[in-house]
Amino acid sequence: MTDDRYALTLASSGKLKLRAKALLADGSADAIFTASVLLHEAARAQRRATELLPECPPLTRLTSAVEECACLVEALDPPGAADAWGDVLRSKDGLDAKAVRAVVSRLGPKYESLHGAFARAVAASPALLAMRNARTIDGLTAAERSTARKELAVVLATFPGVTSFWWLGYRLAEAEDDKSAAWDALRRARELEPNNPRFRAMSLLVAAWALPLAAAERHLESARGSLERSEAELCLMYAVAQISLARKASEADRKRRWRHARDAADIGVARATTGGLRKDLRAVQLVLRELLAGRKPTIDVLYLAGLGELASIAKTNENIVDLLTTRFRRESERERAA
Amino acid sequence: MSHIVSYALERLFVDQDRDWVIDTIAPVLAWVPGKSRKRRDPPFRFEVRQRGQGGMSTVAVDLTWDESAVEQLVPGVKEHARRLRTKTSAQREHVTELAAYGLTFVAISSLMPGRRVVHMQLGVAPDILFDVTPMALRGVESAGRASGGAGELARVRDGSGPRAGKAGKIGKARQLLARVDLAEVHLSLWCASPRISIMEQLKP
Image (cartoon, rainbow over all chains, first blue to last red; front, top):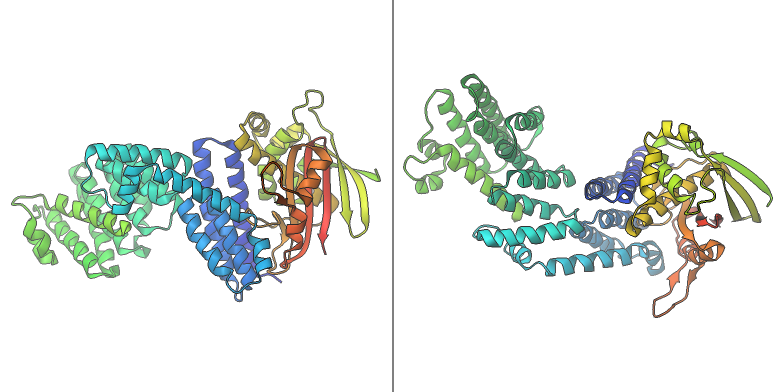
């Protein structure tokens, strides 16, 4: 007798794969990307199903790892498939070689072929490769960024499932002030990895910058209801995004946004797991206290929040909100790269 | 031929869960008629060669569909099938695969009555499962070929030796028989031109 939850979770994975196959047969770039999103979800469901088995036989664990990897191969996500391939190699340890061969024989050549094609594509993209190795886009000239974006577009056209490349695309577009491309790339990264808290958090900030007011409002509103259950970083970005939108708002609307931002910062402080994040949220709380009292936030909020190092390099009369926003964005991007 | 089985494609929505079959209907409509200008309307007769514990037999499966009924079940399916017929080779591979799944659903529903599809796999055989009990899986491995008839399907089943500098291919039957986690497995191979199929129970 099979565990019902196991069977149901596997079934959901199977149905996603079939839907993805149909989209791949359609063949348009949008359909292939959507197929990739579904196949990523199918891979996650496959893993969840196996984790539900109280005692998973080693060969079943191997077939599950193979299936997860196959989903990511079909999703055109070579780095994701490579991680899953590592699980395949680990899972076959100690199993009969003939039994392993029978399970891995279909996937092996497909994985190798994808791996080879991706390695060649990245090797043919020197600007992209250099940026990936350095793990930063800071310090790139406009010409270098432009070359990297072109190379990235070529690689993503063939491998639209590579989440980290969409994230890179977002950052490059943002650095070039290309709002629509930045939002589109970040949206795709989030669709491929919807549970990534950093992508969700950053999307709030980017929405306030890149989207028309009504669309940004809708995006922020969709996050507000779940702030109580969200990570502190999401609360921080929500608060900063509301402060940013408040600048374009009417007097009455501005105060409403500041109050929403203050509520989010209060929730975030209670949920912060690191001292750094707690200081950042404290700074936002202090900024909002000043704004709601009708005062312009000064450098004092940085000292009071324990951000003396930031205060020490702030210029006289520097806009504290801008300074903090730049800091939060940089920190979030850096952590992701690390 | 020992007997004839008539099966209406729209019946799949009764015999199987809708979510499994819905994406295979347009590919079946696009693939089964093939490129022939002569016969593009159902019924399409497949000569199905069955091999199992009871020996060999041949069944004719007359596949039919009522266009308006199918269109009602899957809105836009006729237009979708028309678009699929014009696809490039990379996408045609997916169309063939999906059509073979659809025909396998027909075979499961008509030749193994009562069996319901519960899972589908991409990376490990068999493709279609009706029991996911760990180490006792039951299912059907499917494949489709646009042409080549019985000879081509036999090559899918049994594999081929090295040819023109290319490595040989192990057949699906041998791959499935080597699996120790399968309690029951069938092969379901389909060719569009000529319309031939091999249905074989490999295990137990």
